[in-house]
Length: 116
Image 1: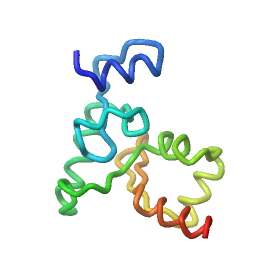
Image 2 (image 1 turned 45 degrees about the horizontal axis):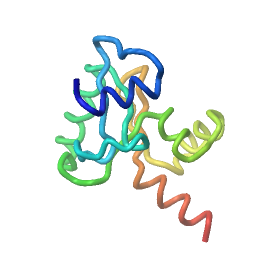
Image 3 (image 1 turned 60 degrees about the horizontal axis):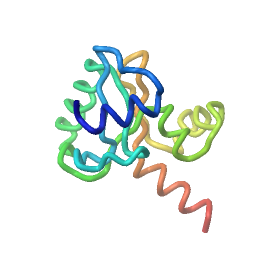
Image 4 (image 1 turned 90 degrees about the vertical axis):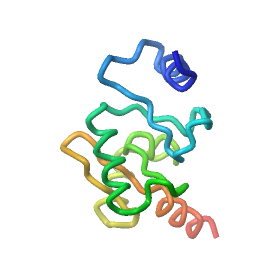
């Protein structure tokens, strides 16, 4: 089994379902740091990378993270996260009804401005 799957299963305390994959947020498959890993369905993962290819950003180091990973990384409540998305203070891409992906580069910019 691959390291990123093992780390995610340890974090969750249970095996991943067959249709789940572990996404490397920064695109570096060697970076198995817990903050760089997010779980997604195979379908959503394929759609995310297809969207990145279409936008011409597939090989770039900025990455999208699932909404729940975004709020975990920045220590936000779900309401605060949804407010930032609805106010368009962070860039978001809706892959389907289940997956809202957040552009972490835009989130980093927002939080850098807030702390300055």
